[in-house]
Image (cartoon, rainbow, N blue to C red; front, side, top):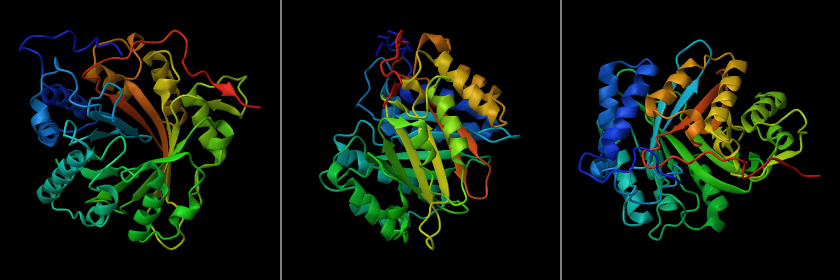
Length: 379
């Protein structure tokens, strides 16, 4: 990884992490149609959530190897698109980044979430019910807690938390997910999930949601287009052709690549959202393609994102503006600015496409000449 921006800084004029990422956020708020007053509120929320880390100058290395981004910036942005409207802006952050160990990381994250609950008057009851599962005294895994904010007009966001099913050991991940679903009333849900190679995240909606979700994320190694089409468990849901078409576009499959061509790099993720307890079936499905592992540079990732958005009747121009809002570099000069492309369908709502945008506060991955994980066909 080569640090090319903010650059080789060694003096006191180096920007701090909080100011740098808050500046990116303010520009993105404008693209998402949020008023300047809302942008200012959300910038302060970001800085407050980072705590003392917000004042850390960017000429110092990341305080810890945050799993949230490739360059260990504990902040990521995303734009969620629907036809005929401006995209919604989301902020993902790791409040406990830089803490002394995962246990302290998780405790810091819980404290920040509970402070948000007091500020915006929402209950943390569902999270409290799972605390012993996801915050053991000897925590393991790549992270403890992430917080996602869906930024709305008025300065009060929707809040989500992402938890680590491997907190008590990778071998216990499936049992942890099953028990978490059971405690939340989804006793049949685990049995409806498709086969997976891992359980990287368990997520909860907290606060002002019409139908709060419990979300299970699954890891799929060496996934093929045909496999992707069989992942949704919603009824009714996205047809396999829609899912496979998005997979082909985001993965960059060519006309000669058959349905058994597999992605051998960073794994594809699926997300299954549960809102009702009667049937055990999910009410939402998302396919996450880690596009940054399957392009030579961000120019290619941007082209795929524009194709996917246009295919689903969504205006790609805010995405173009969003890249300029977070960086001055050209897309072809690095890879990873567009981290994931995702297609989501929730019951009662039209499909949406989400683009995940890296802050790159610490480093930019250089472009590659030859893809390190070429698409391989397994016979």
